[in-house]
Amino acid sequence: MKQRVITAICLLAVLAVVVWQINTPILLIAVAFLSAVASGEIMKCAKVENTFIRVVGIIFSACFQLFASARVLEPWVSEAAWGKVIGAVPNIVYIIVLSLVFFLAMLKNYAYTTFEDVSVSFFASVVVPFGFSIFIRLRDMFVDEQFGIYLIFYALICALATDTGAQLTGMAFGKHKMSPNISPKKTIEGAFGGLVVSMILNAVALTLYNKLANSVIPQNMATLLLAMVLPTSFLGMMGDLSASVLKRNFGVKDFGKIFPGHGGVMDRMDSSPCLLHMQLHLLQPNYFNLLKEGIPYEKNISFRFNRFYRNTEP
Image (cartoon, rainbow, N blue to C red; front, side, top):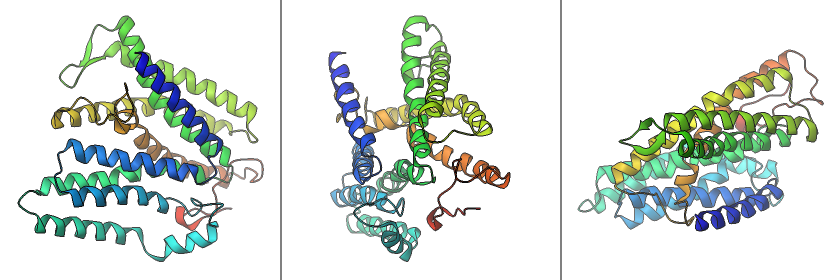
């Protein structure tokens, strides 16, 4: 327990630095690091023996974040300049090239490289970093950058508050196992407790945002965000259980050991990227509806005009 607390304090300190510099490439560096480590953890747990595939997959996972947004390198590189670079070649081309590289590596070393190794490596090198890239996409998606940052914390609260609330409630009141074959310590009572904690903390966070931020979230959007808390938190729990299934299949307790007492990156972040991705697609059409209703552009949150997000201003 002492080790877990010390690690948690260190992680909070690092998080504070990232938040302080969230509008700089510090966020890119942090997300690229987490993405690369998470990809490496999955391939290691799956016992992918082909070193070439593992190294290429980890590098691709980190570099994937460079294509998340045209603003990802500001102020080092301007949005216009980097936008031309990442817009020159469709992203699908890079994925096709990676697939060919993996396939050729399998053919060259077929004696100890299976198709399953390539499939897991492709998942770890494309799907996982895409999930992590949502941190950057949400930050840069709106004219009001504070709201993008709030959405990141919204998803993190849904994931971490649900997990922590479920653990504490389960320890105090848990009697009925939710899925004993997958995760013996999770209980139905703990799950309900986690959902309640997530709802309370998100309501507090929303209230604080409206009081402290430069812009106020419109009432219908605030209602949508609160209505999304329960399904989003539930999805987070399902993501956590899905990660537990993977660990059972791999025969490991944790994905990694980078965070002493907490496991690896995937152990801490197994549901957050999925929740962020859901937000990205649920909130986008709702904001278009707000703009059509004639809500003043200057006083409310609006989409950035950026062809890489396929959004337009009114």
